[in-house]
Length: 301
Ligand SMILES: Cc1cc2nc3c(=O)[nH]c(=O)nc-3n(C[C@H](O)[C@H](O)[C@H](O)COP(=O)(O)O)c2cc1C
Image 1 (cartoon, rainbow, N blue to C red):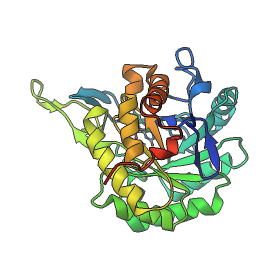
Image 2: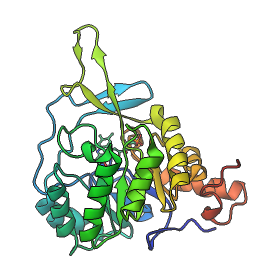
Image 3: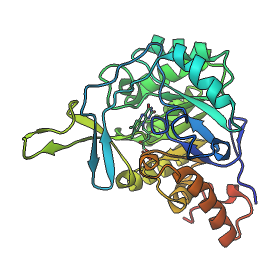
């Protein structure tokens, strides 16, 4: 049985990754999860300088999911290179570094710093709804996305994944803009902008007022967008949004994803990623699927 997938010439032992921001750099999880089993660890977003994140409260539970407005808190690229990369290098898994910024220059600085580091791919977050400047502004207009993608591609030494926002009218158009600018792959979806109001206190639950919705509640939206995006472009698609089980993961593969990422579910069940890897193998065995390629984009029309 073959579960290997290849994206931009990088070979992953299986298609299961961690979704950025839900797994740190794996340190907190390595007591529970054998990181060697994962297709890849996708790190929390890292910026050129440390970011403090947004004021609390910045997470809230919702039906079938959660809202977060962390605001991309991170220690900055210096600490990341010194602490997180050496930790991850100890494991036999691929390393995908998620990059955030407030200006094109911020992104380029991080991308250049990572050029000399032994990491496999870069995932560029142009879709976080929780930071006022930068980030999402680049991911909501096709021409801005094209511009930042081509500049990053001009400097990056590793293959580039552009992480797309679901908070757009036409996901196919955004996918095409990333592809036309040279992106090696796209990933989606980031969180959907949401809001929660405490009716007893008559105030917003999150200090930021709005937050990003993730978890099983968003899965049908994510599957639809992965299907549309993968039909709009030829580059590989990494799918995520509400994946909680192996069946969910297979659904994304059938919709057209070459790999998948597990996000909010890691908070509910720290073993989710490994259980999903085992569950995909069980599914393949049950249905006589010899090669995972048979599943990718395999939904019967
Ligand atoms: C607490 C939290 C932090 C996140 N931080 C990041 C981040 O730093 N960079 C990024 O690109 N996406 C970030 N995301 C988005 C996830 O990677 C993922 O795209 C989204 O949550 C949908 O997947 P899920 O429903 O499985 O969580 C974050 C999500 C959550 C819940």
